[in-house]
Length: 282
Image (cartoon, rainbow, N blue to C red; front, side):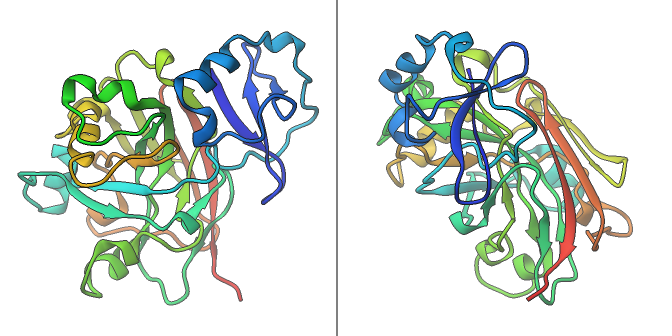
């Protein structure tokens, strides 16, 4: 299934994408696409539906974040060997973990807002892992049973805030609009191998990132198990798993987003996002 949320900001309704590409309304079945419906029982209920009998959503509505009520937005840094190389950093002996504020979450095609006083706002195409059942001290062998599905994420980053302002990376990752997720959540049964997904990111029509989840240092199975040793993972939590090379910071000279720039990114099978960068305006 491809589960989504559509409608104006703050008024999104649950839906699914049918085999023809039409949006079908789920608001008569579930209140939202959140942790409460992403467990095996909730997914089974949705999979039993006949999409053809659900109301068709007319027009071309705005798509909201594909998961509502995200409790934790956990990110993994320097998790692609080729990305670590372009930044001049060593591959970490254990995953680098940081948090992205949930207030950064936005729809897949909403504007990316360049923060006040920003000079180095950057792009990062990433695979998102959505948790379906609570994971606490799980083994690698059992880890995938806790995954509800996957989504596309743009881990937008302000590099000066992240690396030049001291302290944790979170301050460079958490501005409003820095977490576009979606367009939809693809359930795990439709992604047989999350470690073999081509991914790309274009800025102003130029291809900058052209990678694959094959080059992840720490794969999905390992990350779910690893993170569960330090914190419980709850239904609806999202793990953003790192980015391949081609970010603006890695260009020579570096290139950063400016007002009016367009960003187009995608992961095979998980859909695409299109955003316009806009300067912050009070």
